Length: 369
Ligand code: SF4
Image: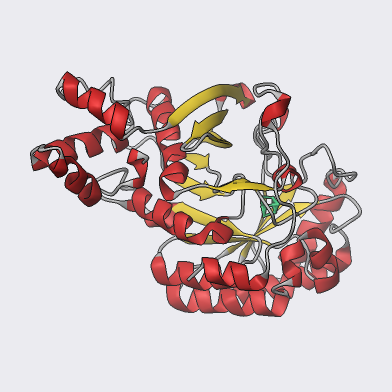
């Protein structure tokens, strides 16, 4: 059992079976989440209780390595969680916010060719606690970086390794943990879940967490190209995705974002820009253009700046807000699409290849029930 998988109520019930008074559960919960402390650091607890907690209710968050980039503004953590699952998470500091990008799966079965995680295949789904504990790692680092801030960590994006909505139940639980007022108490509007288009998950997310943001990784605006770049499009083509986003908007009244990786000579021409503009307008979406980050097994490169500018101008000309995102952490393979087990930090034997088969539509539907 992982302590980060438990709500305060569940922890209280658990500690009650040990004969602990109710206030202890609150003390432990507060220590784990708000103080981001280890059991050893919770010296206000009796030593015997700390030892029993570590033994029977471990927190299972081990930092294997941490690497910094962008003058210290970006930090990538290689973390071992739960049942030995190894993932990467990235903390990014901006002038008025600190954002952590978390992983929801070890690897990914969605098979987007430009993405290093997709090239690994799927090894495991993370539990809600394993996902949320990456935020605890970031919270700890953020507190060191900005000790004066009451809440140094402000934003969480589910854009790391894995497709969050293919691991729906645990993603939903992780979001619940992060928003819990007794714990980290993050603002729902500062949490964003991204998806390549797992349509039933989009609808469920709107029902379960209507205040949480949605980022749709689109990357192509016609079905032929999108099915090539983002294979899940074969299961839910663009018209079904558009309808799901409309339903999400109907429930949440929020503006989604569209993420578009700019790949030289593949999806960065004027035709794609002209197709994207009306689609984004109908979705009431903000478009983020991300210069492609190199990955080992993909033969294309990022769009040159001039092409990127032209693409952005066409989409903007169609009445859609567009942002060209800066690429953070590229030199430590921490940028969008680059997350993968860190070869420098783990032995080659720790790099098994996971399942690369696109899951069946029925299985993904079942996972969101
Ligand atoms: S882009 Fe996202 S969904 Fe696609 S393979 Fe990578 S992690 Fe999976």
